Image (tube, rainbow, N blue to C red; front, side, top):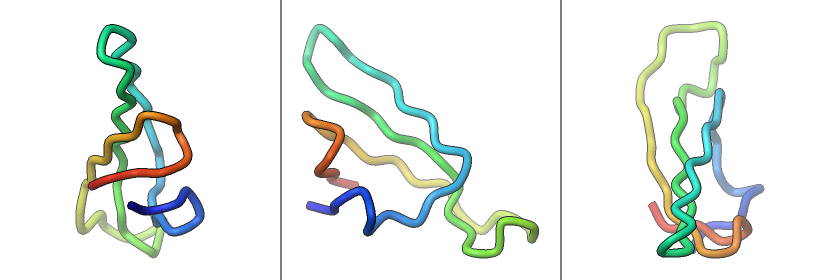
Length: 53
């Protein structure tokens, strides 16, 4: 499990699945926000505080 502060992500988007009570977090992961993107990660959470991904 990762905490919010442990996730390096830019342009985050959270998609809630209210039926299953799961949140999906998507976003690009390049540390240099002005450079070319090097990855796009996805995480899941049930409480918006702790994430698997």
